[in-house]
Amino acid sequence: MKTFKSMLALCLALGVSGSVLAVDNANPFVIVKDGAKIMAKEKVGATKNTVNEQLSGGQKAVKNSAADKVNGVKEKTKSTKNQLSESAKERMETAKNSVTSTKDKAASMKPTVKNALNSSSKVNINTADAKTLQSLTGIGEVKAKAIVDYRKKVGKIKNASELSNIDGIGDATIEKITPYLNF
Image 1 (cartoon, rainbow, N blue to C red):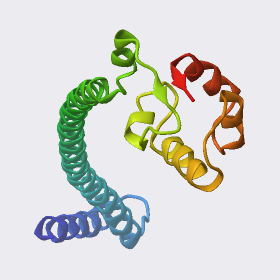
Image 2: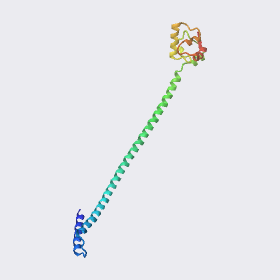
Image 3: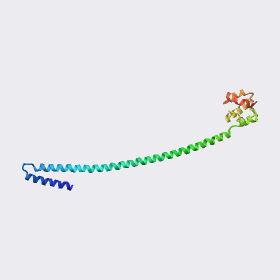
């Protein structure tokens, strides 16, 4: 601001002295006015440069801040991705172990049809309890109970085709178990 005042005073002095010494009749106020315009333009230009420099620095700071935030998000995303990957691997391993364990249990729990075949003994359909009936291929807990209930309701079963009267026992099952039945 001091510079502006000094320049203005200098222009005024030059204008006044120029008008006194001037051969032509130039207006001293025009000279001062022109000088003031020049100084104002220079001051505005300098201020613009300062503002632009400050903005540029601020923009750089904003860009750097944004870049830091983006990098932070990228790192968090990468970390989360790695955690999820590890979790998925652990779950897959647990699932594999569970499947293996279930297969082993299922293998040990299968009805002992092979034992019945090896011993060449047949199951008497009219005297066997539900557990014994379950040793036949295709006869589970529900079908075995249905056979026992049918016997209680109707009486002795006379042949394999009569088994088709029981809900849940179809022709395919009858074909499978007929060779291993006594009546």
